[in-house]
Image 1 (cartoon, helix red, strand yellow):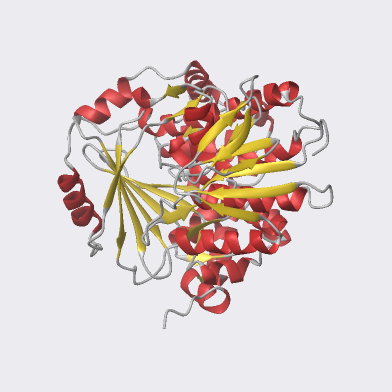
Image 2: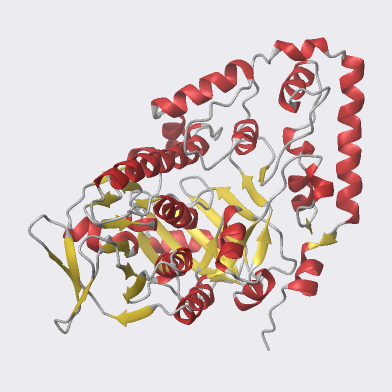
Length: 501
């Protein structure tokens, strides 16, 4: 190795985080002579685990060279146009967070203020009804974003993927790129005099040395947390669950192009369909439910036959106070553990890798890059946290102790301000490093029943008789487009159906 240049990166971890990192780094720096090695820890995945993504994963896969339909066949994947939120209000219907925009500009002005004004005048059409993505999903239809659809605003999609075949696909791809792998049941780290990591020590005493180390060890945080002692900042006070039951349910007869999040009396149930089963996650608190009670509730409420091998794991939501310390960078759950709501966990791996590649150090003096990385990632984690907390803070489930307490809790100032500003005039405050965009916040706020008191008065220059026909045209356009779309089942059958014979 040269005196200062980063010649070798060692990824210590498992599963999707480790192998996404191996693929991303080997691809990004394939021409620079960077060596990428993986110390692979035992997988934590079970056959029933399903990974749910956010829309940016599609572009990430494309960047890494994956064929979308081949990947979906290999992982029995389905498309996801968003999430349906059920029972988050006592007497309100479910609401839908679609991965796309709402409405189209009117007379060059944003759609949202016109919707607020119309609501105040008595219009009873939900904001989600002006979302092509939400409308398609609720009708069981699927479409790929095209230039023709883009005139109506952003449309996007994500995935539900079977975790084990997905990781195997990532690993195979990385090995073809020349990534070296060392299997290890456990590891320790050898530090130098400055406290930086010099090598990962395997059980037989052999060492894998490197210049930069990626901790992709999941919640164990083997390098950043254990070896370097970076503290964990708990967010548990804002989230109701401290345990997660994961199990496979039977395949749904017709595969919806979305996931479902259902509020129960003292817990939250998540359903994620793939082609041969339904991923079931029940997030609960051991102060109010035993593991057996959580399993029984999941079976009863999901109305699915569940596999006999359910697994219950602890859930401790929060993040390491820094993700990059010395020459060690933690990604995914080694850096930040999120609540399952909103499907953002896999996205944090992608975020971490994107920022690392952008800030990849020129030499072993990494202090400047580490400071900038920690600033960016800390903000990104906190913005996702705020979005997730908002679901619990804004619930309208009355006379249930857990939900009453969540509604009454104090929230981070950044979120409190965002809620207050939206209530006042329908404006969304967007901070740096937001994962969820304005349309995502609009779906969340209006879905949970927030109707702003006012709107941008600039739209009053547009006569009502000019705006109202635009509303009607938008709804007519959405209805016509959805009718012409293939069903999600038919689209999968044509392009991405896995043969289970």
